[in-house]
Image (cartoon, rainbow, N blue to C red; front, side, top):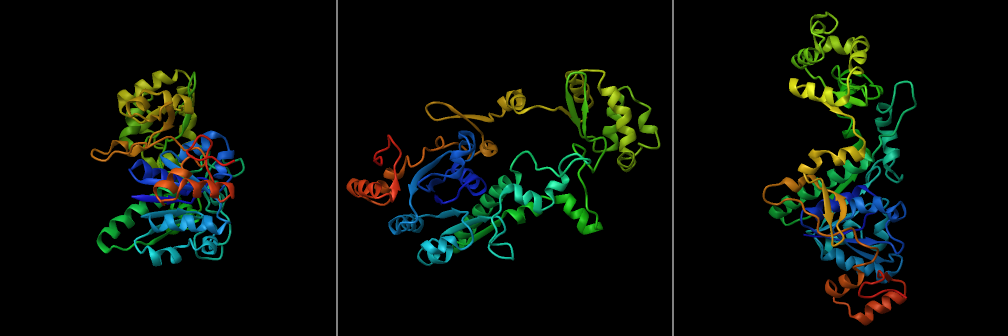
Amino acid sequence: MKVLDLSRVLAAPFAGQMLSDLGAEVIKVEAMGGDDTRTWGTHYFRAINRGKKSIAVNLKDPRGQQLVRTLALRSDIMLENFKVGDLARYRLDYESLSEANPGLIYLSVTGFGQTGPRSAQPGYDTIIQGMTGIMTLCGEPDRPPARAGLPMVDIMSGMVGSVGVLAALNERARSGKGQRIDVSLFDVGIMMLVDAGQDYLDHDHVQSRLGGINRNFSPGQPFQTSDGWVTLAVANDDQFRRMCKAMDLAELPDDARFMTNTDRVRNRAELSALLAPRFITAPTAEWEAAFRAAMVPLSPIFDIAEAMADAQSGARNLIWPVGPDGMRLIANPLQHMSRTPARPAAPPPELGQDTAAVLLNELGFSMEEIEGLARDGVIRCAPGSTVAAD
């Protein structure tokens, strides 16, 4: 499958990387100055753009517009996250392209979608976390609302977008027709409320932030040990009994305050006050071993370095060495499919590294034409590629 990726920053580029890992050929069309994330430190761009070819095109020039349009008409899938209506100026909108390429699957990812009173507003992950209620669920109760530490709405929007593309490909195999996929970060943020959102719909209950505490069962929160922190998730009464036995607190399951999960949630503060002094008497490794033997979910709280160094990360091949220099990148979880596992096609591209090759091989341009377009500022070719701009 040929994918034309006109997107920038995170959500839609993440969808493009997912498709590349699953075998698609992805051509990333960048502005002459490159994707915004190229200026945010190399780690950001690298995290979401492996396996793509990069061409740098000036969309303000009609020749650049026609070049990209020609590529779109030869593509199976197009990804974009321009402001609503922007690409119509270049005849790169779905309506214009689908007339000539009716099988085109066209993914648009925006902050608020193609419709609605906020559709013209820009939307970044942080904005959407604020507007969908996510920030009111993050952080400590006595502190201001907090942004989740990762761009979780962007990441999930990219996942939703890639699922939509795959569903559209499946449908196209039957009908021969493409379709437009309208993914809104706002829509995805509302979806991500899951049980907290359903609690409001069912009971008009607006949940609030509880820090690291799981509001649905108890104990389900971090505790300090003698040398670090652990977090546990005791989701039923049987687990609670086994936990108490492992902690030499065998009397707690018969305490009327803690006999059922409902009781434990209601009396969470009292239960935590009894558990905290016990946890701090022993090191993390000792508690991990005791809980593993009791078959009760508990884990150390790792930082990123510890998580990536854990034996489980190695066993699951979660760091991919990619390219001749072995650039280390985070793996795609779909690498464990039995017949068509996800694999990295190539390292993230340099800006414009494939401009000349794509124009030569995909569009049949001559070297003289490519050199002329580069001199005129219509395209940019990376230094060291077949053709480099002066």
